[in-house]
Image (cartoon, rainbow, N blue to C red):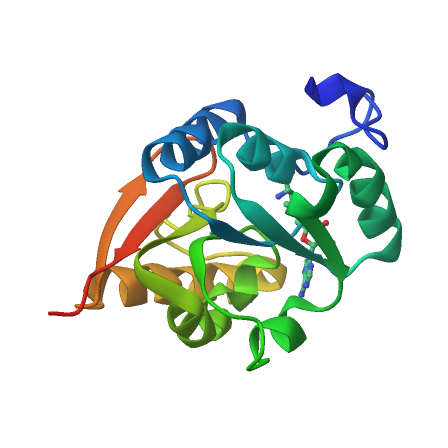
Amino acid sequence: MNKKEFIGINKDEYVPIMKDESITLLVKLCIDNKPKRILEIGTYIGYSASVMLSACDAELVTLEKNAENAKLAKENLSQFGERASVVYIDAGDYIARQDIGKFDLIFLDGAKGQYINYLPYLKNLLNDNGLLVADNVYFHGLVKQEGVIKHKLRTIVVNLRKFLDAIKNDVEFDTVIYDIGDGLSVSRKKIKS
Ligand SMILES: C[S@@+](CC[C@H](N)C(=O)[O-])C[C@H]1O[C@@H](n2cnc3c(N)ncnc32)[C@H](O)[C@@H]1O
């Protein structure tokens, strides 16, 4: 489905969906790795979910805490039938549950300041050889920028720096950070020997 056909996209407004070059990499990751189960954090109206569902045969669970977005996403993803589940919930509550099984690909695109807090849960939810993909890790370039960060953005930037340090230094992950879009990290959970 073309981006412009999505219910809820107003061409005159800024829409917080992934940049095209990051979408291209996400599609390639789905095609190359053929995940069977995908978890997405941050649905918005279902654009990136639709792209992933079109690129592979996976079942996908996507989490959205805004009721109106979740409703629009359900409409936009209805074409995928039971392969797509939109869950209207705060992601932090969902990932702490013990009964949701494991995933082959987790795409992190919700609240940027929460990535570091979610990381231990997401690591447990990933199958060996699974991928943790996170968007906006450079957050408009501010994460790499030296000097003073505006007060209202400081927590997000500091937490994203902690997240990048954590995934780069975790011996159980192989991580590549791509300087595309708004920064995209891809971490593969190593197979335990
Ligand atoms: C950048 S948008 C997602 C864009 C979408 N992945 C795409 O590219 O099509 C981020 C979304 O995450 C949602 N969100 C933010 N914090 C959340 C949370 N704690 N739990 C669930 N969803 C959250 C927001 O409401 C927003 O719709």
